[in-house]
Image (cartoon, rainbow, N blue to C red; front, top):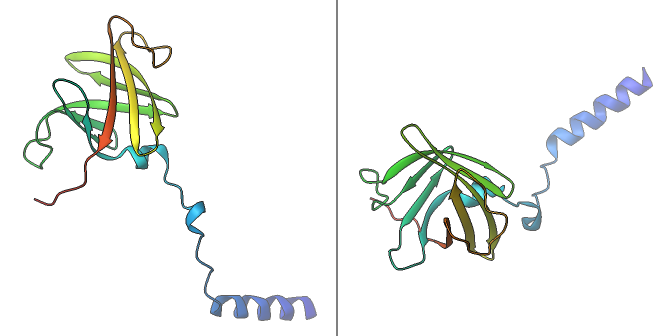
Length: 133
C-alpha cells in the first residue's frame, strides 16, 4: 500500500510540473525535413528544385500554380532517387555543406562521389526563402 501511495503522489506531482524545453542543439531536423522547400541550382541555366515529401518538382516558379515537372522522390541518408512514370529514373547522392545542398545524379547509375564525370549532373543547391502567394 505504501508503494502505491508513493507512486500516486509522485505521479500527481509530476503531472503539475511542466516538462523542460528541449535544448535547441537537440532539436535537429531530419535530412528530409532539412531538404523540404525550394532550392535554386547554380549553373548557366539555374533551375528551381522543390522538395516536398515524396515528390520533387523541377523548374517552374514553384508557386502553387507552377511548381514545374513532378517526379516521385525517395531519399535515404546520402542517397536521393527521383523519376518514374514515363520519365527517366535518376540515382543521386547528396550532402549538406552549411546551408547548401551538394547534389549529383545520373540516369541508371548512382555517382560514386562528387567528382564530375561524363553523363553526371552536379549542382550546389542554395535555399530560397519561402514566399507567400
